[in-house]
Image (cartoon, rainbow, N blue to C red; front, side):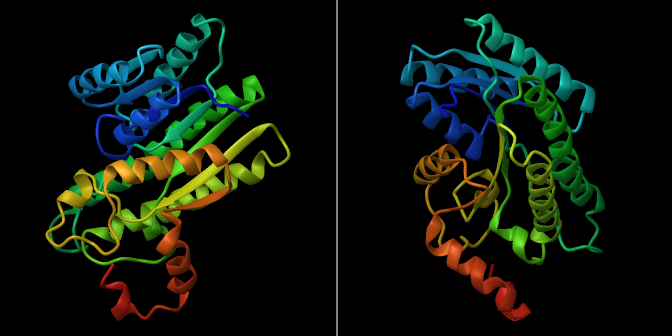
Length: 254
């Protein structure tokens, strides 16, 4: 099924920004939200240059604020409805952050901020999206998790990896709940794709690809609507198979 009207959270930078550009190239109408409205405005100009025939709707949003998430998602639904009575076809739960450090080293606020944004924020987004999809009896919910979801990770990745594991489980639970219904749920597991988050790391992580290439692969994987997708497939699918057997010393390298 073609998904023409797509909502992306955390669209002001990184993967959200890159995916918005890829879907604009495909002729999709976009509903974009993030905390930084000025960056969304700049992105909208780029998108309209990429494809002047699409509609782009913008709203500021902090995904940790549950009431605001519901209001913004439903407002986007009405935006699409006013555009030839169309529906919201796909929601990409992408908003997140990677602040923090090893537990017990004096960064509890940053670690908690990452936990609340990445997991509680995801619950807010999924609740609002599924409410709309259940009412429509159709839609595609996409959770952007991470390859870090499959094992624990040290240092600044400790809490981040835990939230992505929780998001993986959350998406699977929703998928089971709507099994055999016209609502699809996909979980995407990106490897290392260049973004603001990876730019903050001193040493470039292994197997990292550019944002441009990563965004193309993400859009392609999302359009396939599989339950689980690894981006890029090589080498991350095979690393995932090996991860349960990796000793802790090896995990320190990731």
